Length: 64
Image 1 (cartoon, one colour):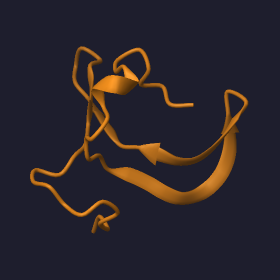
Image 2 (cartoon, one colour; image 1 turned 60 degrees about the horizontal axis):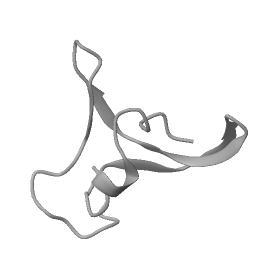
Image 3 (cartoon, helix red, strand yellow; image 1 turned 180 degrees about the vertical axis):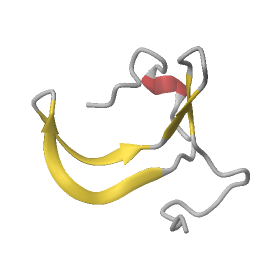
């Protein structure tokens, strides 16, 4: 469902910690049920990068 496929190959993001929005109301995107969103930043040229912690945190840590 994610729109990042044109920027990242799945094997290149395994093990990365990223910020996610979860507990969103489910909705269909491109015919597939989505239950969350990956937070990304976009530069002036349209390049996307993950929003991620500056140091390792326990997976599932709450963003405040």
